[in-house]
Every structure is written in C-alpha cells, then in structure tokens.
Image (cartoon, rainbow, N blue to C red; front, side, top):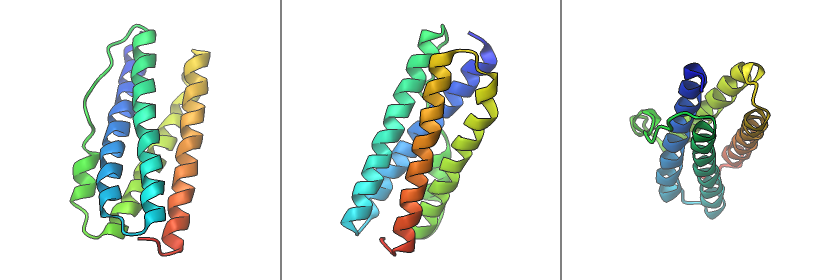
Length: 138
C-alpha cells in the first residue's frame, strides 16, 4: 500500500474516532431530544466511517491506526455548547475538504466510492446540525 494513502486514510480514521467521541459527549449535554437523536445518529456515522476506513487500509495491505485524533481536546477547550457544535461542523467540513482533495488521486474504485459516500454523509450531518442550530435546538 502506498504510504501516503495509508497516512491519509489513517488520519481520516483518527479524525472520525475523535468526532465520534465528541458527538458522544455533546449528546450527553444536549437538552433537546431531537438534537440528542441527531447527534447520536451522527456519532454512529462517525464510528461506521472509522471502521470502514480501517478495513480499507487493511484490505489494501496497510496497517490501520487505532488512535483518536486531537479534535476531542480542541472541542473540550471551547466554551459554550453552541460554540462546540459550530466547531464540530467545521471539523466535518475539514473531512469533506480532505476527501475532495484526495479522491481524484485514488485508483481503487471501492475506496473512491466509499469516500464519496462518506463525504456526502458529512454534508447531510452538517446540514442537519445547521438546521437544528437555526431552530434553536440546544
């Protein structure tokens, strides 16, 4: 496996694990039941994506990282629940941007398809959270 691709996929996996942990913590803080469900669903997505990224790394002959990214600490350091949610969405946008930068260079069709779906899933979760914030669901 190409070491640059392995590093990219492992970085994404670490970010997804961090996002999952952040979502778990924010779910516990959410007062609105609808927001809790939205955050729970996004957290499940993050866990799924992290697992699939690791599976692709292994399938392609690499060594999958089991680390969690530093995004957890970045969110914990932010004051205010709304600001944490906004930072979460910025993190989701970072993942999309990284995927969009790399996807044209990826030769493996299965991996390319997965990353495309993963980016779309992040778009959906960003939109749902932005809508919840507009509605004042905290």
